[in-house]
Length: 317
Image 1 (cartoon, one colour):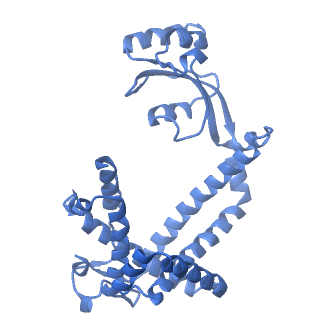
Image 2 (image 1 turned 45 degrees about the vertical axis):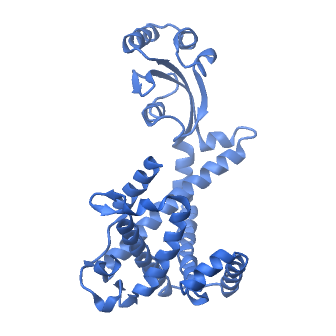
Image 3 (image 1 turned 90 degrees about the vertical axis):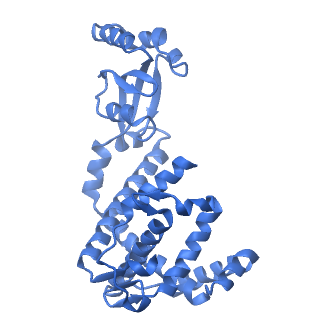
């Protein structure tokens, strides 16, 4: 749990970058976004919902944990203000475009949300006690529609860049099949590496010497794997080698590894293998969503840089 909390704190510190910070107090409001005022009342309602969510998953002591001189509570409230500013900028931007909300979808979403609240007495009481009414809920849903609308626009643009996508599908290695020899002792590992370089068979050496019982009997065969499956030290090397190439020693917490890449696959190559079409489509979708997230972030940063935003940080302490 402590490790998880530390990771959350670090992510919040990295995110804490409000635009146009000001200590001043503009009548108790929390921000001014291109002339649109964000009230403290609105901010506090958003925070109460967020606080409730965190309290359901973490001990309430989390709020006093500190990172770089700020408590978790301060970091969360700072991040929340930043997210409200982003929501506002996105809505303002799309309002000046030809984007239109679908009233039927909005009504359906609001109806579904209200039904969920009505069926949950504890949540209904929480909303009632804290003045979280239908108008507030509708605004949250509308903001979400705007943000998804921007992402949909970006997604269509990404999908329309056919030549660029085809180049990625054809050239980018998406899976690697490799063999691994693991030894705890560095000197022993260097001896094995010399034998490999002198021409001895990697698979047989793995069977005879590897100290990884899960792969040694298979000649060190790891099978095909995508990125983010192995330790980063191993992954970086595996995806940098060509088929047939053998690595130098790679140090991890487990010991010393020697990798040999047997095969690599691109998305286009996967599509040519019977039964692998769905897997190829999954990789395509993941890449597109990765591009969408990156472009969305760039658009948000551009909106921030062009906006006139004042954040009244004293009012969120």
